[in-house]
Length: 241
Image 1 (cartoon, one colour):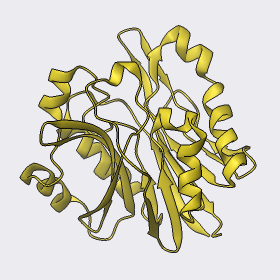
Image 2 (image 1 turned 180 degrees about the vertical axis):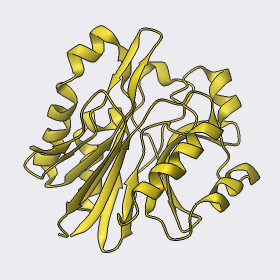
Image 3 (image 1 turned 135 degrees about the vertical axis):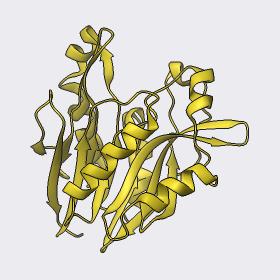
Image 4 (image 1 turned 180 degrees about the horizontal axis):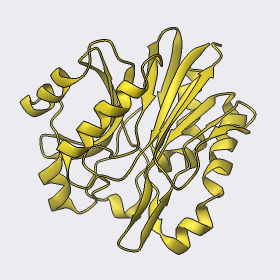
């Protein structure tokens, strides 16, 4: 078994300092876990206006990101953190994989919604390993595409992480409240992967976030889930393949 965790968090919008402070708190709470996943766009917020996104974006080879890495605990879990990445003139909706104060790798969202036109789509799937557990990443809308999960499974992974940000207008939040896990369950049944999702919760400006932050088994059945309306930390022991 490998202990994994997912954070269901408040939404931090263009407040990197507050988001990072929250990340450190949750990372401390997750001690004992090998892997900890945060939501999509967690560090800066789910910003899709090009000007705001560019102003908040982080260059993962830059000094500001290096300072964040240096402030992480040396012996905490491997982290998967949603953020807005800048590389030259391009912006990406990225999940950065961090461990022992180093950038292990990244996954860039490949399937973008119409409102995400400020981002460039990523290319290719990648998998990572911690304590014998191989995992890959699909960011939110990626899980609507069977090939995205299939490529992770083909690389020998047994777990699919899904950082998501479903802060939606209330009617859409109600409509999709039970659909997210249904879609993700299809990917599990197709691939035999476990799935761990991390999402935001709360309300702002007529929008509501209800997650879900959950664990689904290879049969697509939800085996653990946090309540929809409050921040929390979901911890689960995933069997090694």
